[in-house]
Image (cartoon, rainbow, N blue to C red):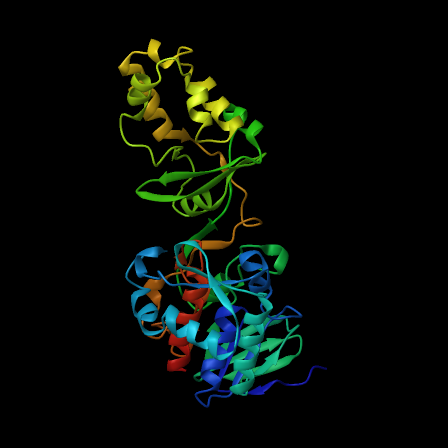
Length: 394
């Protein structure tokens, strides 16, 4: 016979970034909060993030760096709890940090420092944390939610869904948030893997011979373009630029890679005039890794010396290098995805409070919601901002 977990002001499902932060902020507002998770330890995804150093926010956070069926939804929460707000909390806890490229902030030490920060804030708020609690049922009647778990039953007038999406199932991620949302009549935008390596078919197998080669590129999918590194793998394409465009890529579409984004228009014609006896491979080898330069030159197949090439042929080669088309046959799926695109529909939630419009007292935050940030700390900032917004309303 399991013991009851008692009555609280709010029950928060999921001890990840959003759930712990929401619990802490609500607890510090005087609310009696129970934080539940089926895992035996909190913040598992935090611990592996940023190569173990947790890219905890981004100074460039703005609503246009998030994907959602409603691109305006994130504005309110992001505007009310900012990257500077979380950075101030990090500094209050004495955590040393550094900025990498593009506004990305990391711990100098370990991602565990962020988990300890969140647990410390929960302790300040008197939050009750119950781990290893598998949820078997959730009921709602008379303005109260009743959550039945393997550790007992809990009740509260507020229930917060913070169980994330199905990305990285080996850490215990599931689609539980969506099942629960649907049960309460909330719509779910079809989830798909995001920030994920893309795979190439046999027709582009030549590029698999480049496995391990990385180079700065500009990658495009639809209207989205990112200038970061791309990495060739034995299965296809990865690296920051590819992970970024993967969130925008849809099955059947191609992506375009500019292998020399720094080069001005007409640079091959200029090279022909200044060094007519130079070959394309030797020219590319000055700017790209050797194996990549060789492969691209072989594919383009210009005459051996630039001086023997017509200008029109050089323009064609230049265009090919600036927009090399790859048509992925898929991605490496949720197993390798950092986050999920899609989730609980923002049309059914208040952008001010994250509360379900049709179910008073029910909230959804973090990755469970159809708001997905770029690579580089944006998804953590959404976790903090959405968690904070819900905490103010509980």
